Image (cartoon, rainbow, N blue to C red; front, top):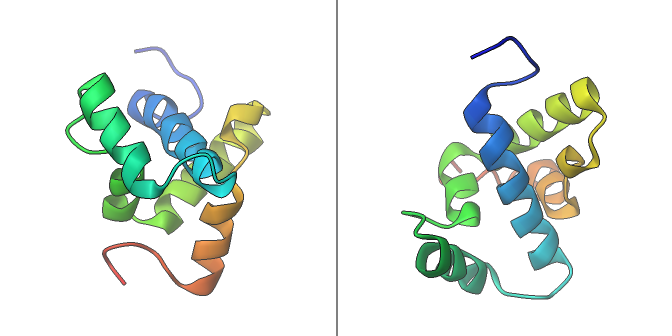
Length: 95
């Protein structure tokens, strides 16, 4: 793997987590529906919001921020719920 901003896995998974958070924020689907759709439709072992809950909202937000700063790519611009939950101290399973 060549040198570049972020880890390969983070660069693939974080946009999925971020987009799921945007879909939830926009009221297009519930968190449960988003996770179920990705498990059934894409064969993921857990949904993107479940994954964010597991790794921590603060970690997902930090990776989004870092990749957005390093690449300038809007797909890494953090979704509002990630920022709101982090500010409120709702960091996922760890809290």
